[in-house]
Length: 116
Image (cartoon, rainbow, N blue to C red; front, top):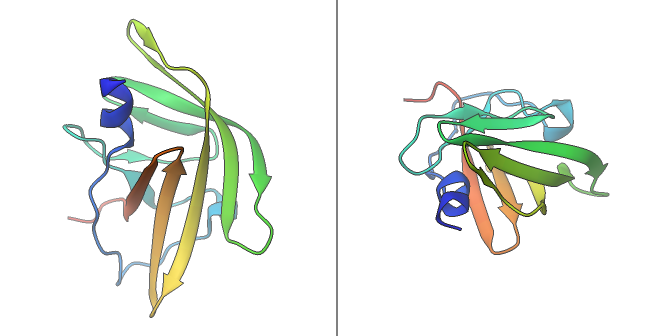
């Protein structure tokens, strides 16, 4: 469970000056920053961390939102988590496009890849 938290906990940073695409365009430019690890760019297939990775399958567009819902499988060297659902959504807020990754009990704000 600790590793799941490490994978899902991110750093909240603003992306105000960076142009981003929508989640349905493949999350181009969005990264997850797990606790204690470097950035990992999201794709429609999933993402990789220093200790493992998560794969996305069965994408479902959420009607009326710029969001996709996935079945998610995460594993690493010697560990596997039970499958769970992940929703990734972008929000336009006062000319600032932000992205979030949500699971049952977790919300992580994604950051723009390359943002220092």
